[in-house]
Image 1 (cartoon, rainbow, N blue to C red):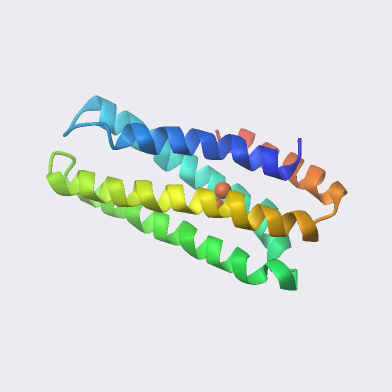
Image 2: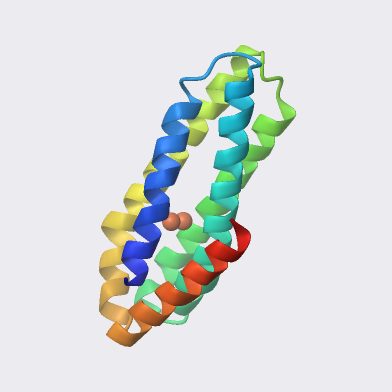
Length: 144
Ligand SMILES: [Fe+2]
Ligand SMILES: [Fe+2]
């Protein structure tokens, strides 16, 4: 498995969870459960992805700007997660913020897969693509 395949696996989990989250209603166990899972997945993925994908990309001229942009989006997603934690689950505002998060996450994953991966494919060596996948997978397994 290379780093792109490893990241894509996690992206699918996130896509599934945000989609489920916006289909939940009010202050329910279902909404709490999915939000907790999504929050955890976003956190462990962003952490491992920054360490084992974006740090090597920030070191290369060609990918530096894209890598910084993606890391900034991780922070924007964190802020939306914090807003959801502060809002009342029963309020209509909660779903509005959840939909903002869904858009942000979907846009971010698409941009990574369609733009960042292409550029990264050119700057990383084949050996790096494999060793980064190993490091990334270890970090995820440790935190899951
Ligand atoms: Fe990301
Ligand atoms: Fe990602």
